[in-house]
Length: 194
Image (cartoon, rainbow, N blue to C red; front, side, top):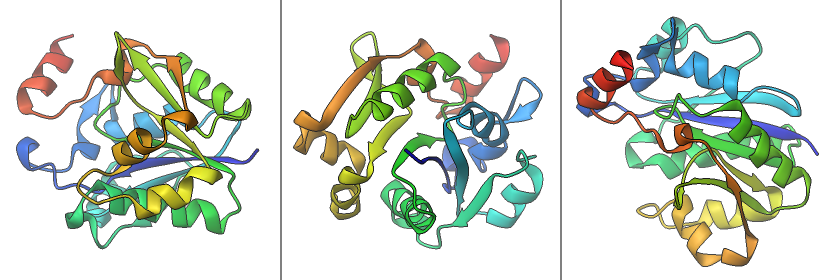
């Protein structure tokens, strides 16, 4: 199975005052850290979907070698447009499954990523980590789920696919990082202190 990782990093980061992809933790940008975490075998390729200030983000993020960049010109229309842009790149390369992960969740544990990958490799159509009863990231989608992702309502995004096809979803154990979104300056300050 050929697996690609898609990092959703196209947003404006309005509450943060700029792209969250460029925030730093542990000496690296959120985008570089996430690319590293989502790139171990059997992942064949990582694609970062950029939009707002794409050139600046690509230039300043310090992306690891081999990370592809896809530009989502429609990023203002919502996250689902970035998922679709990532799917286009993965499908063009012949991928069989994708991990989808928002850049503002940089603390996901390698073990969580490994469990999602293992579920996909074992035949799951969708694999999602959960921590303390709540879904987290990254979500894995086999090719069979891609048409549903593409046709999901923009306002509901990937959640609509999970809700509409519960028979496809395999839940795996996730660490606390799978739920740790950095959405506000207060979230970021807490992260830096920790």
